[in-house]
Image (cartoon, rainbow, N blue to C red):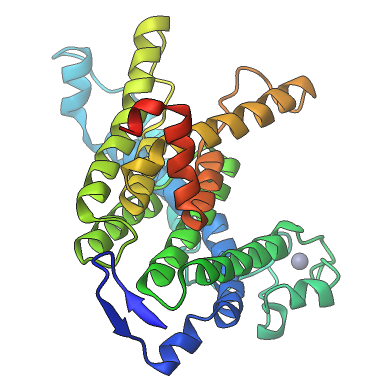
Length: 330
Ligand SMILES: [Zn+2]
């Protein structure tokens, strides 16, 4: 099978590449990536929030007398409580185990039991343990095996659609980033830069290198348009209703990433589908009183769903937009 770029230049792929990029091999690899994504979804928000406490709050309060004075007047003195709160934050951070994606090893959030290698096998361990921690018997969420299974399925689908090509490799990276974004936004209404920016960068680099499904010009316009459209929608809303911009910057960066990956032509379809699915589920949640009307509903999970669908059937998304917005068809 050829390794084809957007330019159409086909290079025959070696047998081992074809094997590694086959749906079955990628499904197996996807299980392991899904297992890692469970760790990312759990730890990345913790790391971000520790960072906020440490720097945005503590450092600022401790060190920045000047900014206090520029805000409140040349004679204003920062209150002592602020310094006390800042040192309390510092003490807490120093007392906590340092956290990264790799360390410490995975453990039960209830009792701290460190998982043995045999308890860390995607899906199988969850089934063998019947969804309970081996030490304290606390239930382990069904979400863990579901994320592993979904990642495996998506990896296999990307391989089926794009074959043994660069697009499959890039597509799988995008799947991993989008799944992590969707879940973190669902849990914390947060889209970390460390996930959204790589999607933009990978989309642009792949297009510039000629190995994306879209030419570099479409990818570059896609990145700018993805960010700009949501910014403009939010700004219009803010002016019309005299409210703060309802669109979070994370959503703008995420749509910029999808634009870089799939080209600007896919953006209207992605927006239509994500807004459509989002409204149906949002209205459903409000109707069944699962969600208060005032609390913000994260948009990231719907963008991720539409983005994943567009990754697998880009042409449908492009024609969908052309049918609904005829001026795009030209
Ligand atoms: Zn436990």
